[in-house]
Amino acid sequence: MKKILLLLCILSVALSSKAQLFGKHYDEGYYYDSVGVKHTGLISWSPPAKSIFGNKGDNIFFKTDKKAEKIKLKNIELRSFSIKNDSARMDSFVVATNKDFEKAPFLQVLLDNNVKIYGFTMLSSSGGGMMMGAGGNMVMTPSFSSSDTKYYYGSDPDHTTRLDKKNFIEVMSKALASKPYVVKRVQDKTFKISKLNELLYFYRTDNYPQSMQSRNN
Image 1 (cartoon, rainbow, N blue to C red):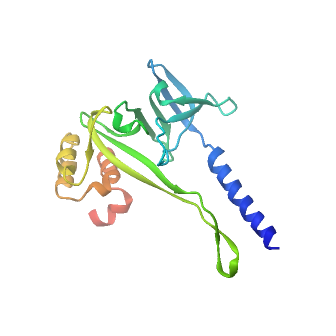
Image 2 (image 1 turned 30 degrees about the vertical axis):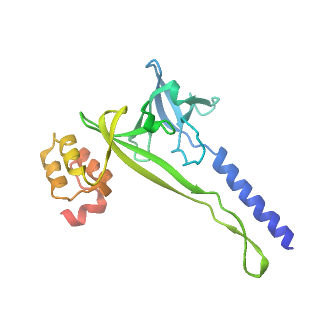
Image 3 (image 1 turned 120 degrees about the vertical axis):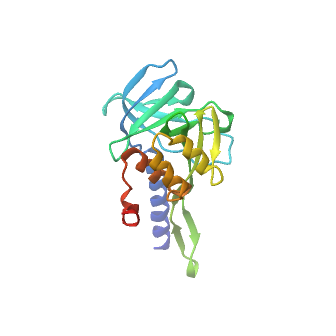
């Protein structure tokens, strides 16, 4: 009986790993190739996982429609790409040639003003496995993943500086200068770097995100 349970656990882990590896989700989007031609269709991409190996570069998968064959496109074949997210907005990414991002060169464009704000995300994950439990029985440990996003600013993706707590007020005051009332909320620390996404929502919509409305009404 124990052997059967062990085999079932191993099979479950294997199927879970296979689903994570091959189960790609496609969303509406488009990309610009290396010569600037726009291609519209369906795109699959997720942030790369941190690795101890010296892997360089990243890629997306593209289909012209749901029934079409997928095409793998490396970062050297792209200038940028955009994917429709859950809120029906487009998430836009540019390809950096800066050596600081050679392992994962896709930067999300969070703000496209004179001073641009970029997001750089990588995943940390554990695939789970088997371990010895109480009474000598083998038990399965769960898998998990988490994301780590760092922020950068600059004039373009190849000339960037890390955005942090020390320079946040100065940088964002310049980046959001077209809306002085938003800058005021940065300078009075209503928005800190930990709430950068909420700040950019406020900048775009002139409304506080729902999570902050009760404190600012």
